[in-house]
Length: 159
Image (cartoon, rainbow, N blue to C red):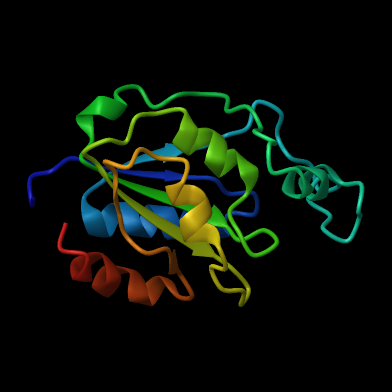
């Protein structure tokens, strides 16, 4: 699969996940796509200590699907899709579910990764895998703790 076409799609608010995504794209020889919300998040929206902030309300509502501003021009061309995000409340932000539900990943390999100050993946794999077809190959969700580990991790995937 060395000639398989790869994409790194990511959602980032602070730039941490963006840097991880860029490093993964370089290591994997992949294209890069930023998952941007139609309504950008403000600092107030991201205040997890505010029980009425936008991000808190979205994460409390399992059916919330924030709209995405742009689409991947030719998703059908990709064999492997890395999907990156910050860890919110122990899982992926709802916009990642929007992204995964927007495309048919049948026959593709999805490789989720996240950035976090220390939280684990929790139920992320089962939640996100449920957004994809049963014909989607799924790699375990990976926490990127250091950009120095990316190259070895990408190589270990055998993609």
